[in-house]
Amino acid sequence: MRRFITTTAVIILTLTASAQSLAGKEHPKWAWTGWERPAGLNPIIAPTAESEFWCPMQKRPMKWEESDTFNPAATVINGKVVVLYRAEDNSATGIGSRTSRIGYASSDDGLHFKRHGAPVLFPDATDNEAENECPGGCEDPRVCMTEDGLYVMMYTQWNRKQARLGVATSRDLVTWTKYGSPFAKAYGGKFAHVFSKSASIVTKMKNGRPVIAKIKGKYWMYWGEQFVNVATSEDLINWTPMVDEKGDFLKVIEPRDGFFDSHLTECGPPAIMTKDGILLMYNGKNRGDERGDKRYTANSYCAGQVLFSKSDPTKVIGRLDKPFFIPEASFEKSGQYPAGTVFIEGLVPHKGKWFLYYGCADSRVSVAVHEP
Image (cartoon, rainbow, N blue to C red; front, side, top):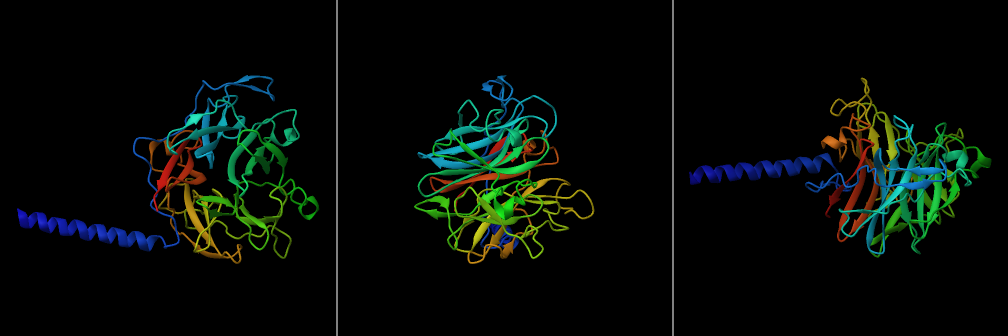
């Protein structure tokens, strides 16, 4: 019996070592892997009919988050983690048909959240962005901050005709100033009204927190859904997309046939400068035909990573061929998007760990934790 136990232990240790070795081969050293879902916790934010506010667009009280809550940004203020999540009312049926608003929830530990009760960014028929945000609303935020504590939100404006990026800033994450399209002035307004979504401003670590970085004297951001482009700015409000020799958007990464990101490559949380390069986490959508990746569900969204050069942020120096995070839980494969979605948008360090916040099937908010 003792010999059997010893032999079994050796086999287990050998298999464990082999699994670790294989994991190392699957993902290069620069990649951030090993994300764990806290047991029995997720989802951390779900729809509720208890929240109600006076809607300046509808001119009536609205249960603004009773249908779905998903696609969260995340940051830290006054020692608390704040998640700014997309919430939909029940005014219609179908993805993109209801009105979206941005909700606020805070946490001491990054796991258990208390809601603010009212949205902090929403369509308003009386403000300067009504034409771009009514009636569809404000969607899919990404948030980061400057060294002096100015929070910058990049979000999607949706009027049910055209999706376009919008910029807003705040000092407290509750009161926001909207500035409209970040591309309004670039190239004489050439790209002011084109389809645009999902912007990830480049950040760096300073004094234990991520802050917006400058490279060669300018701010940089990756953005895009059908491809990833790069834009630069001097003021964080007005951005100039990079173009190719034909004057079209420069595509620094695009979908790849036969991989998990064969349909879309959509930017995730704010990119971050590491010792290896600029790490961009992104959302890859798999095609549902012969050009898709047969290892993953058709039309599912999985999370990938790409590494850019710090000296040339347009240059790719590494890219994962396999996702580092995929839909697994039942609530990640049900709801509005049953094909499966883990849509990453929020990434923050807190008390020695990293917290990744993501949308589940366009219906819930969840978290995964990484301990370096």
